Image (cartoon, rainbow, N blue to C red; front, side, top):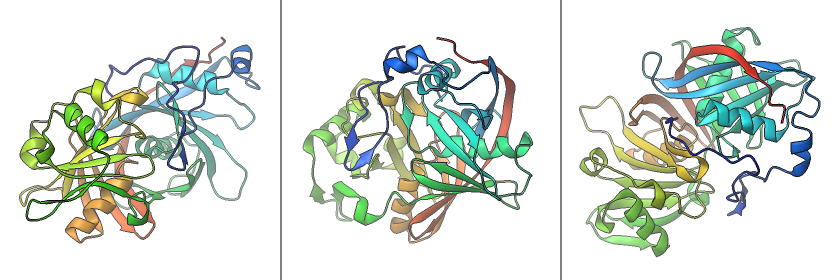
Length: 340
């Protein structure tokens, strides 16, 4: 994540934690009891922690970094302690893993930004799988199941040294609301939520006629613009942070004939303490199906056009989206368990 993210206060997670369009983001205020018992049943004073770059193109210091903490099975950290560690790491996500019973590798998984807990994160899940294999928690080559608030998620190593994640398809047309659609003739055929469209224009420093498509799913907003507008995009985070019912705003454009990618995007989540997410894996569960319909293809190469850059291979398979990418560990260390 960018290093200039907003820092959460010590008292509460922001009040953007509401039920939105039937989707509960599970960002609840930290309760007073958490302050009195910061680590519940946790007897540890320190925890091992790794930083992993996920969805890299070809090496470290690319893609999206995530902090990974593997908790011992018998220990438990409070939400407050997990948030405090996420604030200290100051990355777009800190992910917590805890082994669950079963014959095959299965881990509970939770994701925290520096401001709140979220229900789904792609790059931190990729980082989690990489850590479990490379740090010896799971035998290399064994598939891993993650139990999350968005259901079971699967991670599998591929033959070309990538990790493939099996995630829900967040772009099914039955679950998408189109806010603005421009036809091939340049005429607007759909237009809803005028206040949202105006706020997008202000936040992206674009005029209404520069928007080619705007839609939302249960948690995110997607905007397609032309390649030349994408190349000169200068967002205004204050305005984007005011978007209602939005976790991540993805701005996207198609790839040209000479590009290695089918489409590229940038992702913004200022209301969640992440002005620009270097590579938002879960946003591609919306982006992938959108471009699959437009380009009439089920396998797509995606470029994350943030300053760090990133690459993903997407496979659209019915109500699932498979996200594949590479990861590399950049840091191993020890984190002090918060005492207050």
